[in-house]
Length: 292
Length: 300
Picture (cartoon, rainbow over the protein chains, first blue to last red):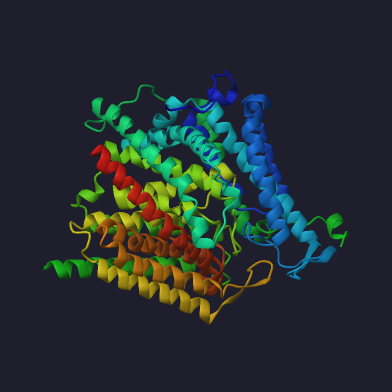
């Protein structure tokens, strides 16, 4: 059985906009924000993303679960990047100014020396990375709660995708919550049998093999369930002739304005990034630099 | 014009177009390698489109390219599965010069491509990666999305052959040669300085990953042939898909991120492709065997 995103009809400025215009705006924001590592610019994007979120009148109560899950992931990844100094994003600083040095701590038995250099650039980068990820997440979280799932297909078709690919995108988005739930159920069921994904033992090959009880049932179950969807679509003669969509989307003036603004935003950001390459690197405020 | 001449001409066109586009990319990125980095992804997306279209036009008559109801549904399921499971797996980052995570889910685009064709494979890899990165909050990395697409696209090309055994020996040799080349690149320059922090990392240990992965894939191809040609072929095609897909994305990063050849190949390609080969060579045959068992039971 398919479950859906937690969409709810609201009479808000955001929901009155055409979903195609909103997707174009979101893509423009995404491709613009990933060009910068300057915190001042990234904060601007976060403000824009938050404006969209609040204009959509989403409540903490309905988005709490999604926020908590994603926030935990973002914080863990930022801490990991901070601790290792690499392994995260293609970072953007060339020299480091030391604030303090923690350790070295000598591990018993193995005798490894663990130390952590806390530098100005590493710290500012971590803050920028977190801000950037939250800006993108704020954009992403708004979509499933404010775009009617029955409009996904018509939206992608309206963006120029062929019918079949538009329908595939529609289904892919609709399947995400269902498969997410199935994955959770499988994980719980395997845990009930004593399977601990956090404590896989053995060599690297044995550990990978032990992931099969998680990945295989979810995949095979999805494929078997897919047969019902195929039957239902075949019975309705899917793909036989030119497809029509139940709901028709039409751009209004506000949508054209949003598309124009999105285009200007992306083009402007690209020109600025080319003209001022320094904005692609971490910006360190003088007062933070003084800490070193 | 004979068939051989036609094929030779097609591949010559592929080569010329590819070299021309690389040259244009080089011109656009400028001598300092940073001038148009913000737009280089657009050019590499175009390069990928040209490659795919050339392969398509050269084999357009094959039923492998048919997109019917079945393919539409499996494209959606594959992409959603890859997205959800990748979101879960993205938490395990690997030491590299960029965002590389340990992805046991790499078996999904390979499996969907191998079973349902190149279009389903490409869609699963590319859209699934977009979904996974989007759910994680990482943003969009077009060339890596396309690279993931290639990981599903290449194994799907097996459906172009009526006999799946055809060309398997040649492909096995190709995979062996590519693995040896990857190992040689690591051995020539095992220590890579992080392009931004300057911190040096030794990737020499990955030689063993490629060696073990290569040997298991090639030996497995001969051992599994007795159980079925599909099980024998899936890892060879999958490994080829990983090398081409990750290779494409890593080489593109020379222009997009301004990496040197060794930073891209040793610091980025090596951890991504090495871990993907290990994951795929173990999980893909298990997944395929499970699917074949279900298929035999349900008759579909």
